[in-house]
Amino acid sequence: MVLIVLYTALLIFGMGVSQALDISAWQNVITWATTICLAYIMIGVGLEFYVDQQKLKSYTYDFWMAMSAAIFPTILCMFYFLWVFRIGFKEALLVGLSTAPTSAGVLFAMLTAAGLAKTWVFQKARNLAILDDLGTILLIIIMKIWWVGFQPELLTVIFIFLFLGMAAVRWQNQLSLPITREWVLVYALILTGARMLIEHSTHIHLEILFPSFILGVLLHNPAHVQPVSDKGHGHLEKPSLLPPSFDQLLNGLFMFLVGCSLPKIHLGDLDWGIVAVHLLALMILSNLGKCFLVTAYRGVVPSRERLALSIAMFPRGEVGAGVLLIALGYGIGGIAVGLAILNLAANLFCTGIFVVLVIRLIGFKRGD
Image 1 (cartoon, rainbow, N blue to C red):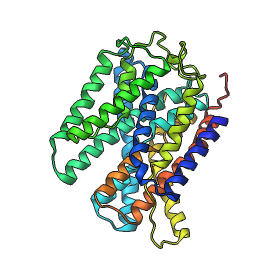
Image 2: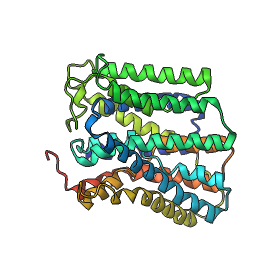
Image 3: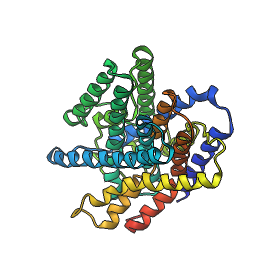
Image 4: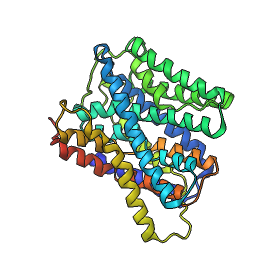
């Protein structure tokens, strides 16, 4: 619980820095550091993940559930922006999409800090959060094609994701490279550098989340631990130059950087009482869309755990902020975007509360 409070405080501090100070000159450094942290976290998640070849159909079901968990918040918030603010359909759809993606990095850091790594909720949320973000990336590609027309690089991104997905199934756990903490950090640095080089030379935008996760799946983990130990990343228990506390330090840094990544909030002269009403409505709608998962996995776990899974998918973060930056890049602004940023910030602020609710719903105690 101490780690949850600390991570939440770092998130809030980062959010305060992004709104109170002009850090535009540091934005590239923040993006670079955030990407490295996320890559490190996702390589670790991939190392702890193993695709059961006998249950491929269940992953297909997970994909459609994750897509639904991304689409429903988008639709609900899109109609709210259309109805209340009378903005264009494409603008409302893109801003609504920012409310959809679960932050895999924030989610994994928080649930691991709470000691939930052995639970069904963590294992299923791990699958869904990654697929949820992947689905959002695909929706962004579709939006870009609709907005600016077909571009070859967008098709290239789709092919890259398809290839990585097939590689994970075909060659999982077969890449024999060191997997101690310092090496995982090196891989994160290499992936981040490669991503930025590709973007600079080809203008193809690749989210680091999926490639880094796939690398973790491909790396050979002798332990084949799934789920991981609640003491930390199971694959990193071998002797390492970096202490176990390095994971917590990096997770905390990631939380702070995600908060710093939020764009500036501009609400014009809108009364703060009205802002509070709009914010409450958006939080309810965006998280209600995630509660669709309560209807899934019947016969697998009781309703309390399905509700806990839905709440575990509430945390938002870097991917939603990325969608908002895309919206700003297209010249979309005004109160609707300001409220979407505020909604993202509020969800980040409540992440610790969401984790506590998950713990209460599944009746979890450390050592279970």
